[in-house]
Image 1 (cartoon, rainbow, N blue to C red):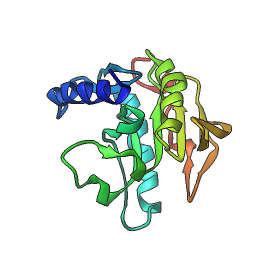
Image 2 (cartoon, one colour):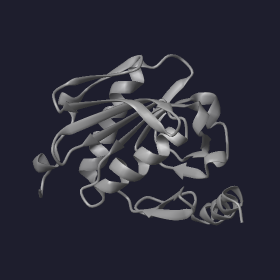
Image 3 (cartoon, rainbow, N blue to C red):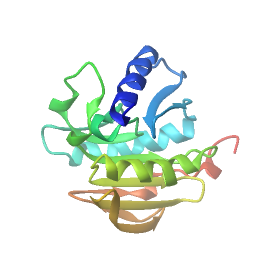
Image 4 (spheres, helix red, strand yellow):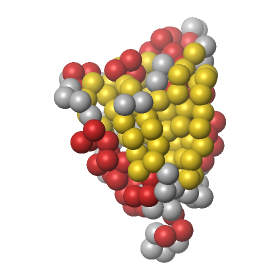
Length: 187
């Protein structure tokens, strides 16, 4: 069976999980496997919301910042980033958004599964031709910006700490607005 055939079968199966209800698992596809992601914590979502609120006013008409499934069938990948910047026209679909319409993905690292963002998605996003990938890590107050995908990996990487302003192509993100997990209630 080809990778594309396996992806098609997994994609059909994944559709049975959609649309995800609040606090239900989100389904992603990578390396010929379904990846089931549980709903994140409030502190995680607060950071994603603050990032979205910063990006929204900077976006040109026709672009949107939000979260949704994105897919690249030829790469046999479907992911659900915490924040995406995408052409609004690509959102006019009943399925996942075409990865070619995505300019930026942001992942807020989960305390329980950091490898997913630092290894798995760092492998997948350049293959999906995502121009900019930002990893925000509230565990230690750091960020890593990857950009310029070529031949399956990013050519450029810069590390930041919370408090820095990160240039993201035409936009920027003031990370002083983000909350480290250590500051969350109950941490």
